[in-house]
Image 1 (cartoon, one colour):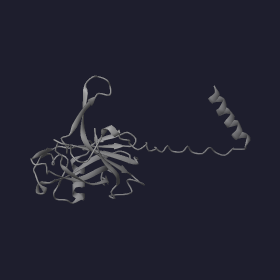
Image 2 (image 1 turned 135 degrees about the horizontal axis):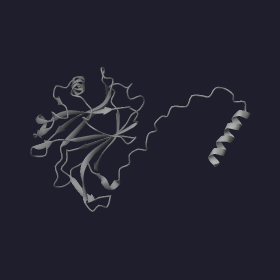
Image 3 (image 1 turned 90 degrees about the vertical axis):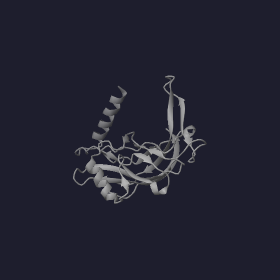
Image 4 (image 1 turned 135 degrees about the vertical axis):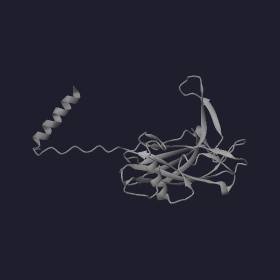
Length: 221
């Protein structure tokens, strides 16, 4: 009742002031960035592997936008290199997810065609690089057996101003904690690299200019 009265009062005041011009077009809604993702301190880990665990050496590349010239769809893609210096051969099957500041969690490879992946691979121009499926498998020891790969995420709007990349699979370290839901079953959390990016300006207009990484940390996830 009060809200209705207030609206009527505002309308009367506008009419009394002589506001007789055509109404203005409503402003377009612009998504506002969410607050930066805060990590629970109890879930953070040092970069070095803990006693009794192995960890591959991971060298992140750049996170960039790719706009398909034929479909006009947009994608994020990320390059990396991984080396096994753990003392024995390991299996490389990473999980990489991209979280937007508006809450959208994207799984690499979903809604990404083989043609698009090949176009990005050609754009990168590295004869040693492999896509997220080709790179899977045993990673032998030493620099000479390093794997170079790239992953792709389909993107709808490019409106995010902050992105968080989660990379799991390079460490054997994990921890079981009580289920927050109170179900009684423990939840297994794995050591994961988290990289935080800030997207400044128009993401599509920036072309292949890399997005700035502001922070890298290791967490349990």
